[in-house]
Image (cartoon, rainbow, N blue to C red; front, side, top):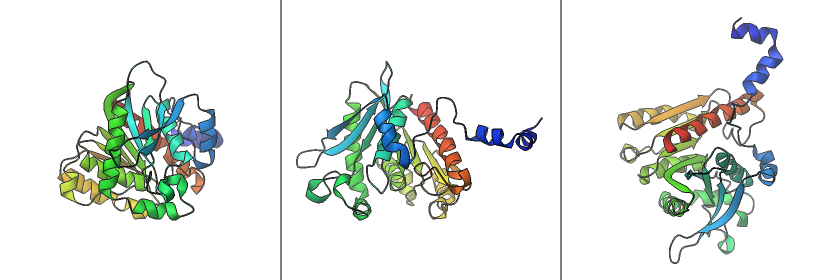
Amino acid sequence: MNIRTIAIMFPIAFAASLAAPAPGAAIPPDADNATKALVETPRHGEWVNVPQGEGEPEIRTWVVYPERADKAPVVIVIHEIFGLTDWVRAVADSLAEEGFIAVAPDLLSGLGPNGGGTESFEGDAVRAAIRNISNEEATKRLNAVRAWAHAQPAAADTTGCVGYCWGGSTVFTWATMQPELDAAVVYYGTAPTDEAALAKIAAPVLGLYGGDDARVTSSVAPTEEAMKKVGKPFTAHTYEGAGHGFLRQQTGREGANEKAAREAWEETVGFFKKNLE
């Protein structure tokens, strides 16, 4: 009996089997369920203020520790254009569940009204503020966060980074500026177009994209070509029918977003375990 026959004879069970998560790779909650997941998690998460240097604002950062006996690799989570939300914090918790110290900085720290961060902005003002963060400023802050994370007694000496939308593009850019990064995962973010910058990347890069997100996904083929030209490892997966932000918005699109979220998360966890452990 082949797969097509099973699908015809038992359509409901077959569909359910496709939607079931891989063992040990439960996906993060979507945006609607993130706050509940943070309340119910058994893992230890805490707020820390990461120093940058004299006269610079501290970076408000959410850190979640895994439950393991040995030192754990660090994964830095870069938020979307919406800033550091409960959903991003829940993604960090899911990474800790997989054995990583997950570190999610608010890159708007000190840049908001009255020196605040994401929480100090109202409405769409947060988007405009994030667009004003230069690549150099983001890199300076991410470098400070990385240095702080690796100074923690429970941290191993490897670093991964994952980002979403604006954060995905920021991951790609940071990889061109941080030679000690060990693995980079880009969710629906664009790459720098400067081949000289791409040539500086030391880490393998994994890109995960929605098939119905042409604004971003149309850049994948040129990125593959450019990365190949400069001899840098880049693996891309595009998920048919999925839209932009599919890990955050898992419902709708006739199941394509949820399917993409499950497959992409499995790729993410496997990629980090291969390159960081």
